[in-house]
Length: 181
Figure 1 (cartoon, rainbow, N blue to C red):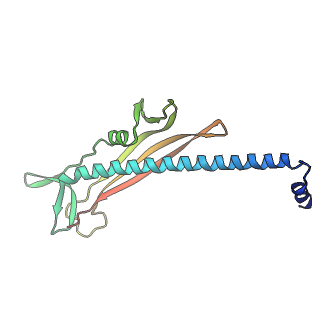
Figure 2: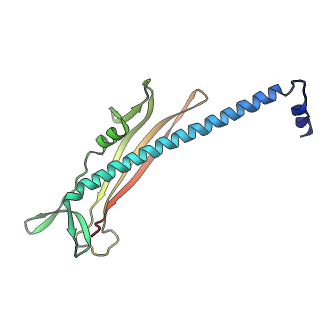
Figure 3: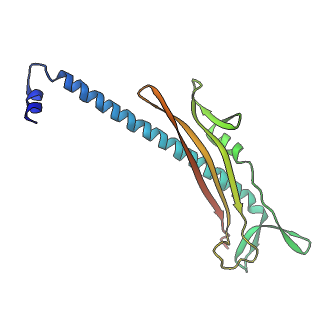
């Protein structure tokens, strides 16, 4: 410790390589932190866009939701003769995502590219599960019209000028409809 203090206080220029090394380490740490934040911002933005598209799909089902005001339940049903028939609309979530995020379809992927043509991120494997509330559910816990979705996200990772293995993650979202009155 004494030797390091002596090198730093020495006026002969011997601390110049140490200062360069410390500066380079700080730049590498800052670059790593910046890349981490870039990945988290992209993942959060995609999650919010998927959530928005799923909520739009749930809202599209609003017109088919049977309002059981006295019974206190709701579900996607249409009256058919003397009974009710389940009626669900899955919508087009990929088209909504393409519009929200500015994606282009390429093969089985929906990709966002930068202005110079490099891939920023890509989405695939969308899975939507709509759970209809049962008719006359009363106060049961599953008496909500819900839509769960999951999608795969891949974002290329670069650090120090090199391309590292891509970050891949499954993004899950959920939305539901419960009548207010």
